[in-house]
Amino acid sequence: MQHLTSLIPWNQDDLLGLLALSRRVKADPRAWSTALQGKSLGMIFEKSSTRTRVSFEVGMTQLGGHALFLSKSDIQLGRGETIEDTARVLSRFVDGIMARVYAQDTIERLTVATVPVINGLSDMYHPCQALADLQTVQEHRGALAGQVLTYVGDGNNVAHSLMIAGSRAGMTVRIAHPEGYAPSPEVVAACEGQPGRVELYTDPRVAVTGADAVYTDVWASMGQEAEQAERARTFAPFQVNEALFALAKPDAIFLHCLPAHRGEEVTDGVVDHPRSAVLDQAENRMHAQKALLLHLMGGVPLQAER
Ligand code: CP
Ligand code: NVA
Picture (tube, rainbow, N blue to C red):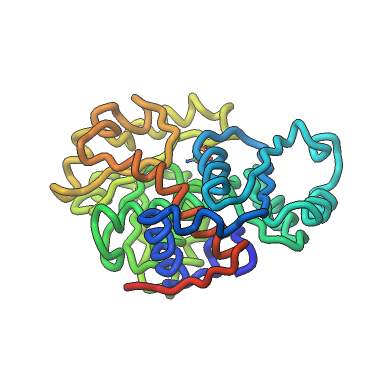
């Protein structure tokens, strides 16, 4: 694997291998404390971030390397320097590039870089999030194959990456969405022929019934602020509240990529529930990304453990 623009090229062994490495890194972080010594990661941000920025920066430090925060508005990219020129120039200084962008095309254009490029969220995908999500399900629920994960809400970047990762890991990923907010048909097609599968629902109660994990995300993503009010009305029946969560398995976990809009897509009672795993999930961003950085920038091979 040279870049991580999306998880579409990954197979079950790649994913399980990344998760196995992430578990090793989490269990014994000191063993990897010089693995990326002298290496730098350039982090381009067109959008806000708490978890992605901090987990990549701290992760690089813990691996003995260094990360640079490059806000689009502070670098020449914001004044018209092309994405390709930025990628080629950064390649002469840094050993990897992580970018959080609007258009997926921006990530694809960055791959003219001669160093690995990592998608830290685009309007289309959030692959690093999905890696942490699967690690969290594994920790709380065991082997991924056969697990039912229900995502309730917008067929957005987070949903797309969950569908891609979950289907490759052998899970059943159910998506419950309002009419008009289905995931991209292109992503649905990319999940066919995999060990697991994707199922689409418009009734959240049917989709959540018997699930091992229930997941939601904001109704209006970054860049969709103008649609907030209309979306709040449309998505109201899709709120993950205590009544909906109670339809999942009695030991099901709740997941959310965060940030949460409490009282909108999820109630306090669910996000703060004893079976909410959202903080483990946030922490796992760092472990999974350290594994990814070790693989892409440090040449550490991925070996699947089933
Ligand atoms: N989940 C996630 O990507 O969070 P940030 O937007 O804070 O990075
Ligand atoms: N779907 C959200 C995820 C934030 C981590 C967004 O793109 O804003």
